[in-house]
Image (cartoon, rainbow, N blue to C red; front, top):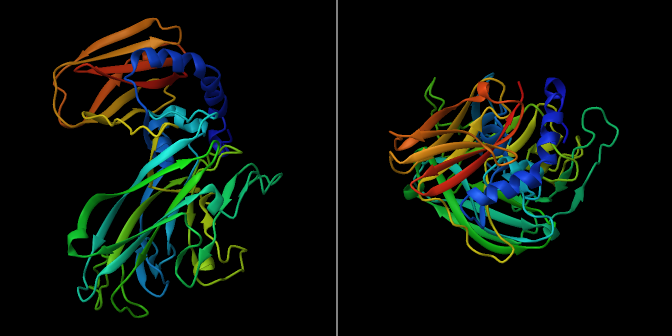
Length: 400
């Protein structure tokens, strides 16, 4: 594990957590509901499961840089012409989530992918097109474990290289390509989610990736305003706008030998500009000096046997914030229905029950439960929540 800057002190905590992983995993198995898989989203784990102060931003996807969007510094050109994510479910980071890292001795199945979006149709003459591409490891150009070895800033960062076809304006050589025609039924001014079936088995130790590309069907001109949120002054020619989201990790958290990072078709890929050596390829989000980019794209993973994932029908977005914790921490989760039948139990690594409390008056939507961190000694704990007979678990690190 490599953490840059002022957050270097967290490395030892994370290594300590990994040393106890086997014992903790066995303990969790005795309490948690059996599960054959889950949604894997690297940025969500950093922000919500570990509790990093990871930035979260919207971005406008468009195949040309000739139209304008509103940045904090004023109007500027679009810079994300296609956005994707490389996903390596074997990474230790997923042991901080409900999903858990995939066993390195087995393969897995990508059942589906999803991502949040917004879509505005100001032009109604023709439909727009959304292109979703899925890549297996053999579709990538190469995997680079430590291409900047020895560099004080970039050393230790691993990335997967993926080619970009500037003529077709999308990724090159995908394993699977899904083309969706966008019309008025897809419009949404609020956060919505698109989901696509993949159903592909992946070999042992291999990584995957997915990209999203938006192709407008209506005419546009240089200087037109793409950004729906810009209204001062009101644009004279507002064009259709497809919005996606990404995380920006300014802690630069990464693990050498694992491949989890965003991939962005920037100006260099779109216009074959080799001035920064990234022409004709997706720029890896791990190569940034501002932070590591991760697209908000989830991968639904099932076991090697391909058994469909049993998704919880009542609880979602379970997280402990912050984690590691020193004095205060919240167990945060969303419910699909209210309940008065809940119990929270905290176990230490030996399996001894440390604390338990009844949970009542839980509401539909988001709930926050204060955890008694001040009463706990430094170390690893297992937090379990039982809701109407369904048991869920989270790992908690206390470091006071």
